Length: 249
Length: 228
Ligand code: SF4
Ligand code: FES
Image 1 (cartoon, each protein chain N blue to C red):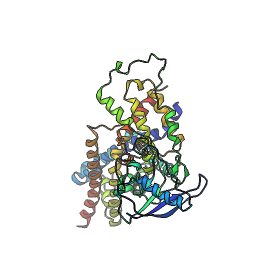
Image 2 (cartoon, helix red, strand yellow):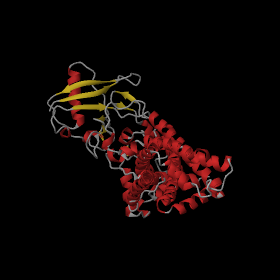
Image 3 (cartoon, chains in turn cyan, purple):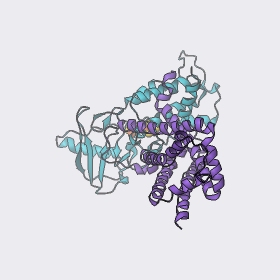
Image 4 (cartoon, each protein chain N blue to C red):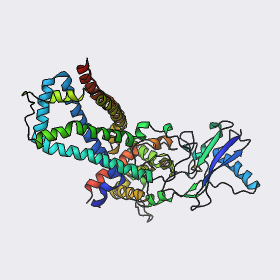
């Protein structure tokens, strides 16, 4: 199929940037979206132009590196997929496709479609962990019984790959689905309870410091999340925060 | 740590929800009393007199209500501003309707419409009440003929077609606001449960439609009652 692309081009963080139109031809419907961009970049390189910079790594939906706001939706029109998993068969011959970087003050553009998502790393560093001794005589994990339902829910929360689609799609650029998932995966497990209060307070504070917006429960994040992270995780974070703030001294 | 609890994004969200829930309870009470004007005018007069003169309601609950309305408004505007700033460059192509409802994305618009209505509403009912009771010092609730004045005052307001139309439109905005706000408040305070949340959502939709519909009905009832 032949496509018209409108892509955000921006030389570096300081550049103002603009949408630029390109044409690609002979795109197979079996290609992934990123492979389609590879074809475009090959064209650009062959004609001596600067290729379009975009993030990617695993190309199998597990690393969370690929981003892109495609035709008005984070990761494009399909549900439950990252951009590397998005197939070109979701589009039709002759389509015009808008390709923009994830937009948020907390995710500044570095170049073209590449944004800096290190705000997520700093939120994680502020509390998204448990402190354990790695002295060599670590306790066997199975020594602590955990109800199956809790383990399942914690695992569901832990499938968040930190891609940032929730922020990109939220009209408020809120990071609450991501932080909710990261708070929940520990809050549900006995090992996480020890630092639970500090964790939620610190992570919420760091999230605010990074400049993410305020959640108004539109639910858009849950719909666009490639891993199906549920809004119940945000509610759990709110609960954890509420109880931490009234019980903390 | 105590100085930052209410000032984080989650803290503000919880406060927004609690003030919203408080207003939801108030509205139900207001709606019920107003409905009495249709089915039992005498009782409506008596209840109005009670509500208007009971010291607990006047000096304790009324200021709390005024604060609740004010807080919900100011916080709503503040959050909207903050949220707009969180995305300085907008998308060239955006399709928000694919993942969220119009109501959820436009709470600021429906909210401001309701607040504008409240300004008219205060001018219509609250200010005259304050004037009669506290400036003129007339706490009797009676008119010149020695009868309760509430029913006739209300009916008089609703004899004006323009005002009735304004009320009807405002309650449509209120309904849109509540269609998202009711269930959203529960989510914000952390209440999301597989078993109960579907019921809360249904209850929220019911509330958001029935309560404004009753208010609209009351306005129309009094209008047509006088123009039939
Ligand atoms: S919650 Fe979903 S959308 Fe947000 S970062 Fe995690 S995987 Fe991505
Ligand atoms: S490149 Fe790893 S998830 Fe898409």
